Length: 341
Image (cartoon, rainbow, N blue to C red; front, side, top):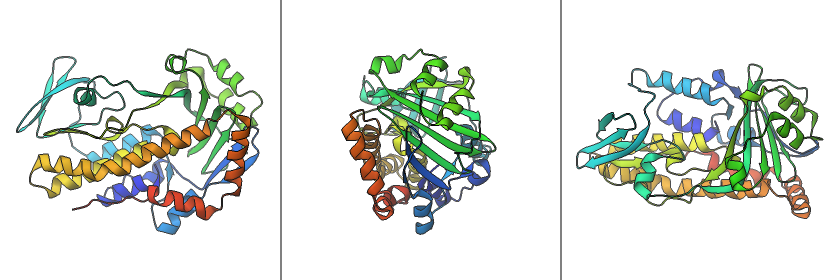
């Protein structure tokens, strides 16, 4: 949960105790595959300089638990898969796979990259494949090379690995490997295949994989979608990955969804016309989310490089980049822009 997401929650006066549920980020390092240092990224320093909340390393489960507690007695019904919706001048009705229906003044499609609400708005629209698979896991794990509160990324040839200290003795790790989109979408390998892909990498990388039960490893294809200019119509809109799915390189998916929600709340509260409030929300969010989607895609392409000369130039450029240049690049992303009247 990067600083801008936490700042968005603060804008609504919501405190879910992020720092108690996760681990405050203290350092962010980039290494080569063997664990040799390339650069430190001053993410914590930027947050302190700008007076922003700290970035917190937190599991999706812990974040959702905090948000559910903050929601209080708002009714939430699980186990319902939306298949489409109907609209009229006064609201919208969602249709579910089991035949149930739900009626509301507005409909917010926040149902992820494979959103049924988006599909009805846009029609058939294939996801955009980035050409690699992502392996993900959370495991009880500590290592001398992974300091408390640290994020460490490792860059290889068409591969990456990441270690994030979640606090409480737990570590989140991810691995990526370039492969054809069809293979990434249907990856059916084993833990042994993953371990083989990282043979010879830093000891902490191999140790994290070895410590993880095979059934706890999730494999997903790296995907986003072409940026959507039209998020809704009438009393319907989209939010988060349903509106603007992005690759994970900037780790901004959750924060962008929270920013969306805060701006949506603000525009609806300030506007007597709900339809106008939805369009106002979309207008405020379109350019910021477009920029973050594009930046995530560009960074992903750079991180997954295979060409040895391009990789060498990438690593050398990062080594030589002064912290001030990185801070200038990240300042706008890490700052929640607020809600315009």
